[in-house]
Picture 1 (cartoon, one colour):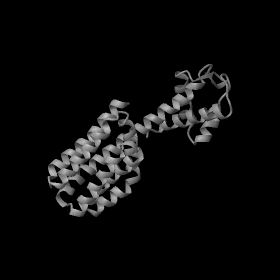
Picture 2: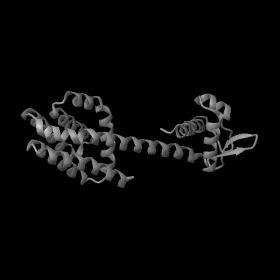
Picture 3: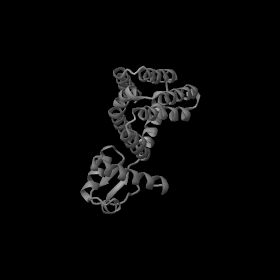
Picture 4: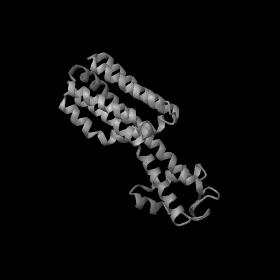
Length: 231
């Protein structure tokens, strides 16, 4: 993450905490540049730049030689400012994780089509059954979705890939949870997503590695596309 952006976020968060917990009112003074620099372990120049950014948004007033003060009628902007940066950071992490998943899972689908055993195929099919039951249970849907992709990885019979996907499982789970939360504001997407996974399974079961690769790539690309539309 850009260091300047991170510094800015920390300062905004600190001002927000002070405003809410200490009940700072418009016109109250916020910590000095020196105090903020010491608190966050950054240079005063970085603090000064961040404060100027807040001033340009009308959140604070900087008085020459007098310090920085909460601007009149601007208190609520602090929480909005912090929320905006959190949302932007979360969106970036979601997209980066989808990029990573695409890099590994597209090839995993191809390998699974070449190497899946009957036991692997049964495991994937059982997950699809759970996914079909999950239309009214978001958390069950998340777990079934995650299990599907992990079972596809297992079917590659590449132990390094399996271990890697296992290591990423918790991050993948959160990624799937967030993408489903955004995508499934449209209830019809439940059935569409189930169909996408079923098609990937059928391609793997028919040992069609090219089609499996194409369908997995299309699946993850569609998630990214729908996320952009929902934000």
